[in-house]
Amino acid sequence: MRPSIVERMTSSPLGSFLRSRRSQVTPAQVGLPSTGLRRVPGLRREELAVAAGVSSDYYTKLEQGRERRPSAQLLDALARALLLEEDERRHLFGFADLVAPPLGGRSRPDVAPELLRLMDSWAATPAMVLSDTLDVLARNGLARELYGGFVHDDNLLRMTFLDPEGRRFYVDWQRAAEAAVANLRAAAGARPDDPDVATLVEELTAGSAEFASLWARQGVRGKTHEPKRFHHAEVGHLELTYQAFDVRSAPGQQLVVYQAEAGSPSSQALTLLGSLAATSPT
Image (tube, rainbow, N blue to C red; front, side, top):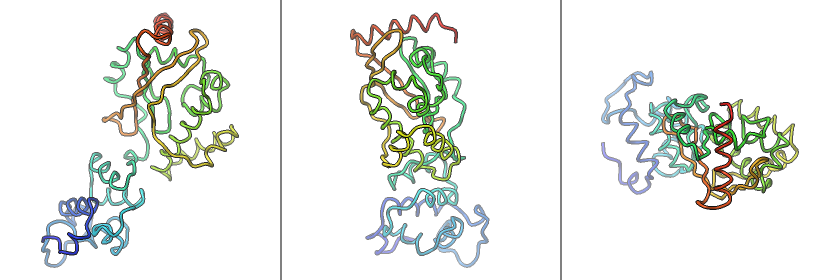
């Protein structure tokens, strides 16, 4: 059945997407009985509302475009009820300007072997894989050498706030600290009930008054592309640009790649760092 005139006038991209997905799911697929004469394929609105655990009135507002800012929890419930694949989930969350949390509530802890081999082939380029909470999941030889002075080297937030090396290594420590906290705030907003996120926040709050103060500001942002300035104990000052890429095969993971301007002192320092990495044990 075609949408009514009212629906066509008040609908939204979110409503259109929900309607299209709803038409492709049968009651049996979500454990509901198929009753009555069915004039449309797929689920009725009230059936989807039951499957997602939301009120029928609220769901109707979503489809009709009268509610355009659903919560992440509601979208996750709808994604499960509609049996959405990962790319479809991301698309659904995008309608509300939200980032879909990875299935299972956390990033995969393992990094694909193909990606590890690619990173290791970049002998002149520091590269690492981060989770959305800035856990360091993998790094190549040059990245290991770049961050070689840290004791807490498993998470960029711990490195910034809990490791004494952080204040010496990050030339603009305040900016690095603000950016790291804002990244964590974005991850926490995407999966507010994740105990791992809560545990990390508690650890950082207990260990650093600066973190507690920045966390209370509730600033949120993803990664920017501002140059990063580091001071390495052996090669001195480095100013590096970077690019961050989502790892399609592992939602929640990001590949971060650093680069120095060709012919610059930072490029020379990076070359020296590469020679140190080549002689260091893996």
